[in-house]
Image (cartoon, rainbow, N blue to C red):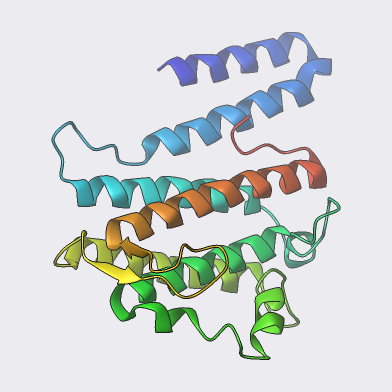
Length: 212
């Protein structure tokens, strides 16, 4: 009701002050975005941990997808900052990250690939950008497939505390292990971080903001 009252007030102001139309439209987009976020299911106190993890994943994924609303393939592949990041590239990267860490939970460090593979660096670079033939629709569709697999894994994994050894890498402590729980939290954090990147890129494209 509160969000609806804000939107109604904006409509009334626009009728009285036509020049304020663009400002009011921005307010309306913000209200609609807030409503969509709040309409996502919320767990009640006492709901099990797996439900909370899945809902957290869904919320940060929403924040990542939202900046692509209304974007065509050309817009989604445009750089708007000094970074190489684009809207399409971010979704592609996060899809690969979530898919890889999901496999890590089940398969262990072998799922992360061989750091000494000469083709791995090029694949990593390509994972941040839209290549010829890739589309926004295709990237989002694949992201939905990855998300569904992750959610099912969280629901059905026998033990969230089961751990796997992390692959050998300079950024991981030697001998460290991550539980399934810790891995899912990492995916949530990574997705939230890149949702912020996507919001900045979208605002630089056309001034639109996902969450204000």
